[in-house]
Length: 116
Image (cartoon, rainbow, N blue to C red; front, side, top):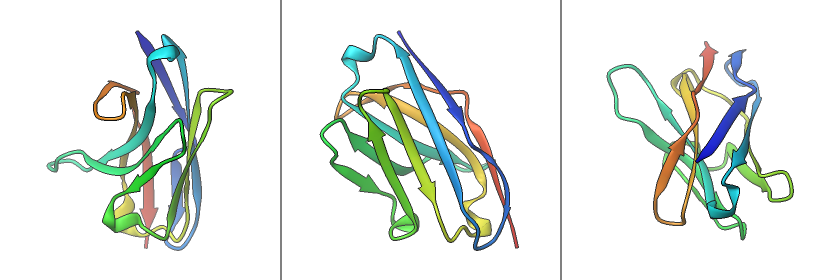
């Protein structure tokens, strides 16, 4: 089992920045990748960004150039730096972990609200 604890969500005005953190514990040996998804009520959960322990990254199209994902392997923690935030970035952000191809553990989620 892997436990994921997110922090850093909150409210910000458009154009502002937030930094999310997610610390993993438990069976971390099996973690090869971590990521962030977000969900808005009535919509499917969508990929924001993902990163492997080796540093390879993927981003959702809507956040490219504004968000940066990073990982501290020594701390088993993934970060999401979110800049130039837009109201459409509002949602619940979920941390996830798993293999390079499959995410199978999820955090509780942290709310991000961007006001115009």
